[in-house]
Length: 79
Length: 377
Image (cartoon, rainbow over all chains, first blue to last red):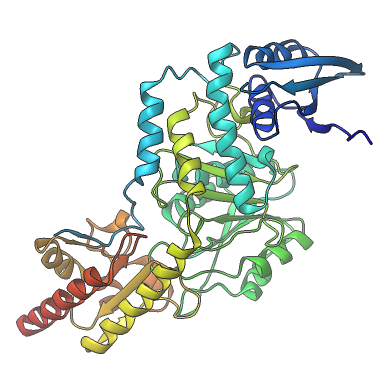
């Protein structure tokens, strides 16, 4: 059975603290594990995926839900 | 050999903290509020420390805010709550033995026309929650009672006070600068709305502290000019300090706390067994693991302090803030101590590095110097 991805709610958290929290969370997870990150629309939804990719993570998908975005992110091995 | 027994004033940095802070100081640490790549990396240090603080007190990371020290944090609480809740009331309750960083802003509020009540303490320095309840009025907006006193180490019954405040929708704050990591804090169990946590009392860097602020609690900022910490603490982050604070909390070992308790009890019994007319200040049962406070009959604390200093034994008379003044300790006066006892107090505070040998040496010289001073009188 496929395991449900863990979710990290970063709504209301300003940039770049939201990306920092996401990176700390991803660092605590085994490489290859999927994390769903919820961020606010606007600056966070524009900045967070870029910051995560800069740090070696892969953004596999994104969905908009009202004023929020959900990004599916995966930490690469060694990333 | 120097014997440092003034760890309630400040502690020496732990080597692990020094390593982290100095390595960060050599790196290219950007502003954690900057949106670029280096800003995100700096923000990771801030957020990592925030998570460590939150875990230690059973809070959510979003309820932790960093400040430049305990004094700034406490001023923000007293002035900031009074300002944010002025529509709800104009009455604040603080204990009579709070640190000056609580008492002085409370007096400032009084000068602005607000009402402040000072809840008394018993002979051991403990607040009776019933006394707090009796002072509460329909206009009370904040109760602030420190977790453990900086001079005498008495630990307060936070949960009972917190419970009665929560029932009446009054904010409850505790200044936990001396107790943080020494006495367990659970912000949910203790019904805390706000708590002050300090770095330099636990071998972390000076110039950094944190506030726990429960979600939904309203506080106006003291400083304006930046959006850091949700606008509650404007100013560039002290990234190295915050990271060092996180490390200091992370490396706290429960064994060190128990060892300090044993050394404290040994210290107290050794003084009482060797020096006549030694009166313990504070509580025997509910006391910080590192605090030893005594008054010696017929002896001025300042004179004893100077003699010990000449032997490289470093202690404090009353609180460090009052060490250069020959005034009676307001804390001891609040306990009902006569002026002689309130002027004669000597505070000795341990760290995780204190040893039995140091205590033996300190008691040896205490015995000699107390006898010497009494012979002169």
